[in-house]
Image 1 (cartoon, rainbow, N blue to C red):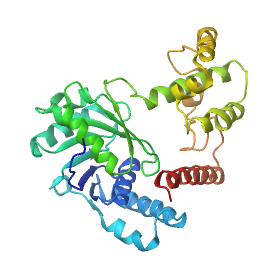
Image 2 (cartoon, rainbow, N blue to C red):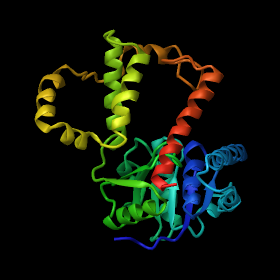
Image 3 (cartoon, rainbow, N blue to C red):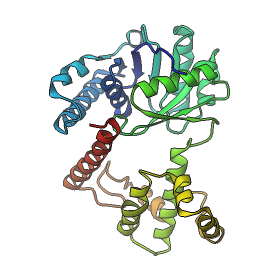
Image 4 (cartoon, one colour):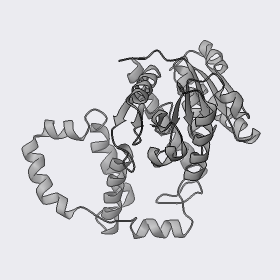
Length: 315
């Protein structure tokens, strides 16, 4: 069942995810208001949005003639009141601090009419916990966009314990109109689906490194040039079906017992973090991130994701 969605969306937060969600909504024809915490946040978000839009024009995802029309659909503001005025769907993308989100949703619940859906872009916090101070938690839901939101099609729609079916259906309908690939997560579980799968892979990658079976580069290559390519077409269950469940069953029986069950990050990861080596953000991690290498890898990733976006849009 599809709902008629008012194409006025408000986004609270103009940072990495906020401006990228705004761009993907504007590309789909929605009018967007984006709230920024201060003028610096707004200027940074606006600059990044225009940079991303410029790349989409250069890669011929959109015509240059439509670029101005798209940016005109997005309005930045320092006023939450102005941002949420007349909105039918509000997406929150503020920092991942539970108390901050709880206070925000308590306020939104009081200020917004009952037909307004209140959605969080949280990647890990519980929608049940976020909505705990609301009088009407049935209209609160998680819509977890993946970074970069304008290029990754998946959005995980996660129910809280009191989220109404109507809220879920409206969210799924809206996201489909935004040309996303939404999935419903029917239980409020840590990490939803994508992060649980991603971190299961990351834990095993750390384990293989720890036992000295391969280098960081070799482990990354093993994923990039095998399952990384295959999983873009077939997920884990379809891959198993196509490979033969009898084969996957027998391999699971002898391999599962040898896989890592470490309850925390492993020693190399812990050492890097303890030394203040956080990866690309400050120049060193599992890799050395010179400005040139960082620019090269970000450009390569963006180009690859745009190639898939073109296929999704059948350009």
